[in-house]
Image 1 (tube, rainbow, N blue to C red):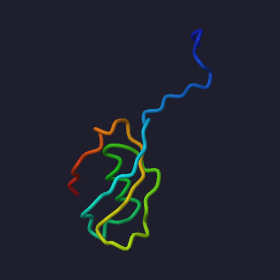
Image 2: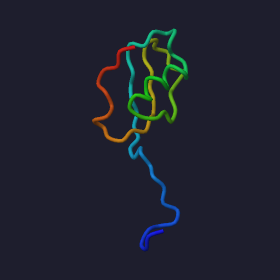
Image 3: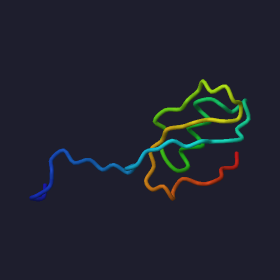
Image 4: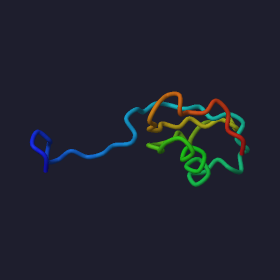
Length: 76
């Protein structure tokens, strides 16, 4: 170990988190598997709101590297 480094230092590729609203998802694809597949293109899922009354809308809290990494549109 180099002098001046911390012993418990860990590499963390995701340094920001936020809520992402995904619109236009067919109701058939609103499940944990498909939501994780969509978010894995730019980050990592922390949790998602699965009790929304509006069909076609999913609110996901996720971690990502930069806000610019979150795409404006995703085609399923």
